[in-house]
Image: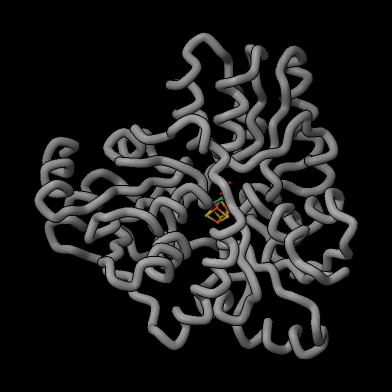
Length: 308
Ligand code: 13P
Ligand code: SF4
């Protein structure tokens, strides 16, 4: 299946992008694995005519927003994101009316229709940089309250937040982390900013997924407790066979990220399904917000490639 997928990718002038949380066999067949920022940057720059996105719906939408002339394919249509479902354009319009002059910073983990109402997008890799780039004292961050609260600790601005979250990261408790730390007292604890403030207080380092990969590669430390979705352990272990990686809590599994199997990718390429196309009325304003973010961002791995 791996070989047939690679053959079809060549025939169709297609590129296969995979998020760091995807299954190992999907990461192995991909042209590029990365975090949301790296994948958005790659999608915006590729010469390929077709982008096959192994991730979740909002990621394929972001690729469609950045590349209206390319065919963007999401192999499994119901690979969604509960955090993106925590916000609607109607609810955001209501909140916007209460906050005149306050810019809206929207995490890419959101529907295209919400990006279209936002001033700028951000990812977990560039959120602090994005907020600091704005010229107001107050900003509203949507939809992740945990990312917003984390950014608030790193900026002088007042950061208002939307009350959404990633249930996978948010469910991990302080006690879960303390248990992992007790089991591996020598290990450094890295956490994703989608974790709750109580968990982030215990973190030695806070990074996006590719930020964690990059740090694990460069650091002299030999063991790590990883506070993000379990898919990240695969590239970490491949990159660092002599180091030890422990998942911070067994519940860190995103069902949506695991919906895509090799057979789905093969079928997707054979049938050219499912095409994700954001309508122009939404795409044009959403593109403004995405482009503004991409212009001020560098990839967390820009100094060492995550191309496979
Ligand atoms: P990053 O890979 O950008 O850190 O995102 C994490 C995530 O939850 C994606 O759904
Ligand atoms: Fe959404 Fe969380 Fe899954 Fe990422 S890990 S796709 S934020 S539910």
